Length: 481
Ligand code: ADP
Ligand code: MG
Image (cartoon, rainbow, N blue to C red; front, side):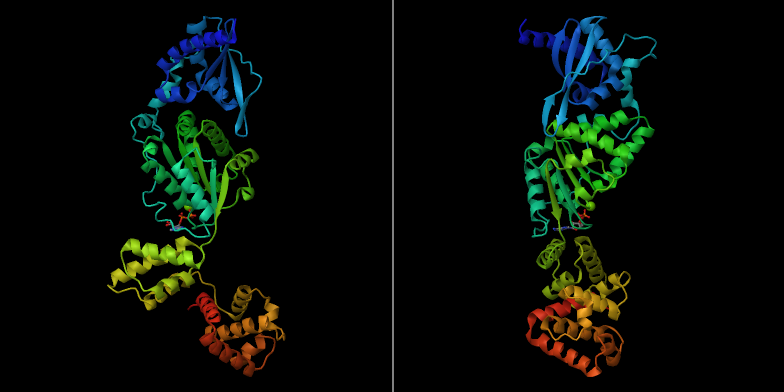
């Protein structure tokens, strides 16, 4: 018999099985669990089928064993047997492993009634994964419509991450960025960016038909836990395995949650093997994800990992300008510059200040002046601002100029030390109530006239040296009161 014939026989036998299976499972389950199966060979009454993974095989055995028995009875008779051949996933290449021979399910003994409706009954269970909704196109992608590429400001800090995200948005699954992992500190735009991917896909012609899903890792975890409690793990898994573009936010949250990770691992493999797109974010690089299984971490490396850095001054200015423009208000550039200089850490904080500034201005029917910006900002940061004292002035200045605190106190006349030292004295006078004498004392036991000289010098230099003036201003803002 030629191999073609063998395959053909296997195919006929499997098609007969599918007839029975189709009658007993939902369309979704059929699509997820039975369509990917490839009939491989028929040897006597033994049918060998190929399944995509070990997990797949286990799932079939756990959930459909009775149904498979029934199907075999119909297709091959009571002595029909089933054997699974598992396509082992090793990296992105799939290769066949020697077949795992599995004892075909034995004919029904005294199983409870209705054992074939295993799958159907699960649909009547109330659970959050309304599989029916998928058919009705009523699925919620959980995307926030406000996050777009068009309102994501590009800068050196985010160029790669943005470009990769855009590529994925344009051609989900088809770029080499699968999975795409975006990481970066809090408030730097991770969620914005990955939501923009989802929205971009949904807006394209082809993307309308794709099942795009955004989920936070917290939500994923609690859904997983609930599904175990409610005995609907099957629905949970089936639901996620039907996603075309899975966007999962803040995966660091999965650290240490072994069981959740395991389910994610299987979903991840299933989707990836079926050419579906996966996008993830994390607040740290994958190598720092402590408590994350190695096999999961190694999966993260298949695609592209891109980071988001804190935005530089120009990008911060552009972000503020964009927000102002979107609000349709007019704000003087000096105010924008002031804000951009004052809030460096992250964009969320910057936005927070902007929002309260706009709110205040509209509340008091005022325009946003520099004065208002200053008071608002002072108000907001006052609480978490550390106490201004000579120690933190010294350490901040030392850090800014990349010198040591001991250099500020030393007798060295090197210009590299003199200027920072004078700036630190100047700021200490401005921001503390210390006397000139005390300031001199703290800066290596200097005379009060040295302190006066320092203050005078910085004042004079600021008039002519733009760079110095900017730096002093920037430092000054760190100690605003
Ligand atoms: P993360 O998820 O990294 O903590 P978010 O995506 O929630 O940060 O971003 C915080 C806020 O900052 C959001 O409102 C977002 O729109 C805004 N944001 C961050 N980066 C940018 C950017 N480059 N351009 C415009 N807005 C940004
Ligand atoms: Mg986020």
